[in-house]
Length: 375
Image (cartoon, rainbow, N blue to C red; front, side, top):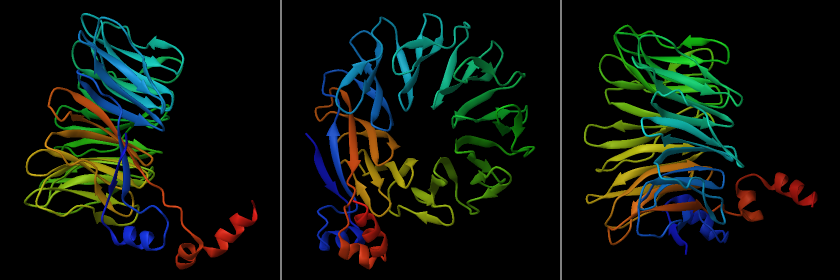
């Protein structure tokens, strides 16, 4: 059963007065799992959700396609860390001595890595999967390009936390002194940073754009590579960490001297989405939709911004953690009310249907009439 949650914003009241039947900041929340075991680490892409489920013996990978749930694994070993992109799902499977990378292409499951070395830090986009593999001395970056596995690095230093956007791969590599950002552009590796003694970490990318947090010698700032140059999105005396990017928009958490808040860059300006006396951390973004964890003084809850209004999606006495976003949907895991198990939850933002009077006020009547005339 779905619950409806409403945010508070002038835009929401405006749409309500216009009689749209739906307001900005309005969300419908559903519970995808309901059992006595633990369901954790959900990921979402389009209308599909994947997560880890404990079956009483080990962890398995489950997939919800919008109507029903399917077990992608059913064995006697741990399957963990799922990543999803479209109908492709990647995860790590325990072999008895290390973790290997597995990929489900919507029909069949293949084992991508069987090198006897530990594999970790998965990222998936399209039919590509990137990860770090431990070669006995350090961590290197590998890529499944849809046909074969390619090792993108081979050096004496750690290369970790790879992220792929389906055509390129970015990661943080140690050079013996500090961490730098490296980008594989499809044929060669470009080092985006060369900071000599200042760490550059936690890169993420989308559509060829790369963001990361880098030290300026005083604190961490958010930097963006636009394909040709690097620009700083922040320049302050606060710590700015853990950026995420989608559709040219960026979110991150910033410390304001008292607690952590969420900031959003829309491509031209920075907007602070939260301003309160409690921690707001680990923001995720898809288009203009943002979700994060917020501390209410007792436990962690989930909050979201749909582009116009902020809504708190949960309000209970148990922890709700690690939201993920796709389109206007948010997924997370949270403890059941009795504290006996963790379950997976899904929230969907309502899309207001604007009447002609609303379109007129927004200056969109000509477009509305044109679209109506095509029916």
